[in-house]
Length: 143
Image (cartoon, rainbow, N blue to C red; front, side):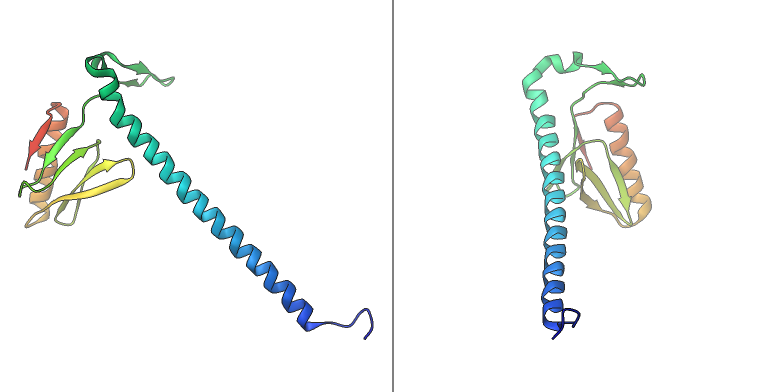
């Protein structure tokens, strides 16, 4: 065999090693990204839950202004009680209707169904009821 002869087994071994490395690197990247996202969410949730307890009554006075002029004022999350009284969720600001179901944002990237209704209109009416209660800074809304 000369130096220029092609060795199929050697080439296959090299390709197999390259593929294994590529798959391993891709898997590590995906796992690291998922862990980082979960860690970010967990830290955010922990801070959100701890602030009211740490600040107590001073929470109402704890506000600041962003560079763009937006004023940030913390407020207690409205709790939503399901029609069957079997589910109580803290609403972190988001509400949406999916088909005939009312969904409540319970964390930064988490939505939970609080109730299913006979039609979309009833679900939208429930959403508006919760929205109005949140705007009025009510602590609890019973559906």
